[in-house]
Image (cartoon, rainbow over all chains, first blue to last red):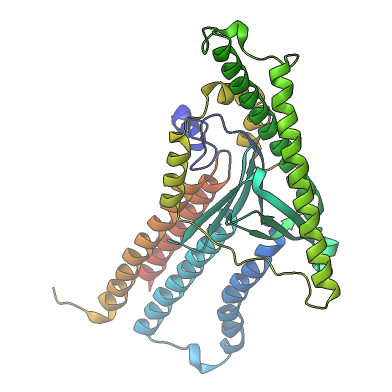
Length: 312
Length: 67
């Protein structure tokens, strides 16, 4: 019996969140600040309090002197009313509790639960992140350290606006750091791939039996690898130049009085289209070894499964 | 045995409400079960909600029977 109860409360056999890829490591996940749920709690309490207050005022009058049928009706209606508030509270809680932002080692996933039967999931690769801003506005927000985090992404990827996020500055910095790391890792992988291709071509030209010859694959000290890194460096510099140019344009716009360009409207995709997208990505063939490497560093996953949220 | 609408009327209405409430609760539980995260409090909430709901229903029937 005890085992059954334990099994009921234990979700470890499941993935951490729906749609999580194999080997994908959750860095942190965040819920809205509990104060964002305060309004809902207050509303529920008022709904409970109103009939009690009414009863208090009507107690001394003849209005509550009911016959048997009236008493039965009051009991039934009162009970239904309390059950309705209970259900209303549960839906509000689900809306609050299942709204999360998950940041993994490769992407940002924004899960938005809108009451029952309305759920949307938006995601973007960490490498696509362009700007991360945090904003704390208002007395409560300042006192209790919560605010809004804006994540702007490159191209047609989804932009995010995370509201009521606790410690928004820390979160924004963490996302920016993870983005930097993701870009560096992607560049490294690309450099190795370019180096490998150069090595293959050179060896083919020299008549060597490659690919598949492990000894002839490029290593960090090889000239082919360095060529790959060189090409990547050029690409990075070009990207930096583009970024600076874009920033200059935005500054110019600001000085001209047109203000900072507004973020594009958040586009959300449903779960099916996300799965489809993932399948398409997978069809290009991710190396299994990459996933294995990711698993090695899976330090915080168990902790997250236990505690749910990262203590910031 | 005659049908006394003053006794059965409210209780039938309440039972109909309970059926709707049960369907609604099942939908909410489905969300908790399906979309909850590892190590979260959705299951605890489901248990608390069930206990509260059942207590209210049982108390209603008890009070009703004593009138």
